[in-house]
Length: 217
Image (cartoon, rainbow, N blue to C red; front, side, top):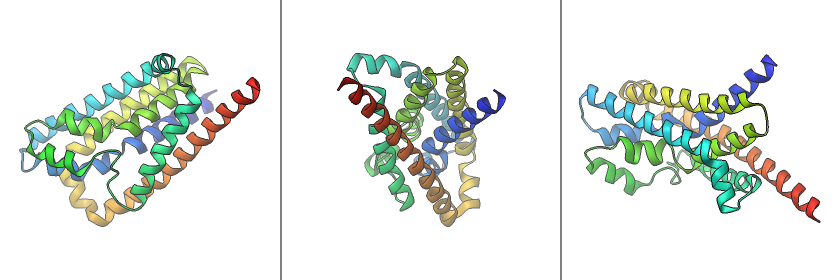
């Protein structure tokens, strides 16, 4: 039982953290906060991390209701989410900013804005389509099991949000330590893990969808 809990907790946290990927947000955070005072950057990082966490928690809890309203099966959503994550992972492996997360126009708009914590830092940079799809799929899996699995998914989102704050708050220091080559290594490693998660989502979705179609036939 304990091994099962630890395994599910680690898998949930790894999936959420890899997709949110606050390290990828560091260059954008520095570009949009400019030469702001350290205290202001810390406040911006805190607000962005909290907002992203709340958005992901909301979609994790309301995903099942959205499925019922739209008539979309979890299997179909897993396939769609997996394809989206696969596209993002290819961009990350090529060390290109995934446009599914944020575009150059959104970065430029963020630089001009006075307050960038909610838009575009929290959404769509941290809590973007890929992150939302991931937490919805994880919570969909959890609902089929014991109650503690759902609690662990929500805990994974909360922990990722907290770590995102620390990464963004220390963005200038992280940028100096890692440098361009360091960020490239981290991004490629994250892209590889994200590709594996994406393939697993697609396989799970195909398995569920095909089994339902065969039962109907």
